[in-house]
Length: 172
Image (cartoon, rainbow, N blue to C red; front, side, top):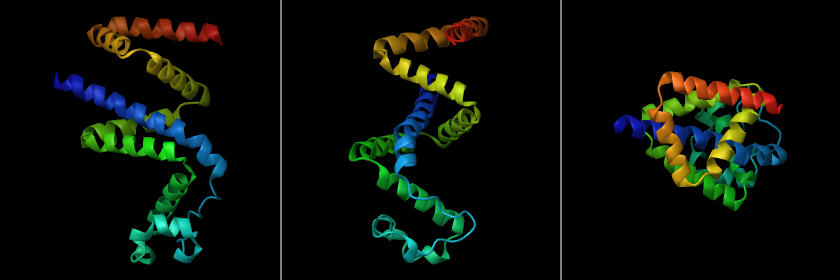
């Protein structure tokens, strides 16, 4: 039963990653200021007042931080500032769920996220469509689907995946 719980949590973590991407990507791209120069440190004085306020806990040690860390913080702050209050609330909830995961589950979610990011755009779109389709199911339907998948033999799983691939190809 512990393995089942880990698998479920890992799946939730992967969904978190995809959801986070979907929730923030388009808005952040549309409203984000120009990217930070990847090679140079960022001067505290070059940050906007809103960015300085959001990063105030780092003000004393800002100049001693590696440039990469400064830039990660600035990028994250800019994404945060570009979010609506609803998006911020959702991000905080997802972060709280993320912190509940074990380090192993977090690592698995990171690997799945990187694997997703390496997919071609059309396959990423299919992943998003399937995710949305799954989210539209009732909790009972989702549970039945999970149980059916978990109880299936590797051969049955492979057949289901192959049939799914064929259906998707016919749609295109």
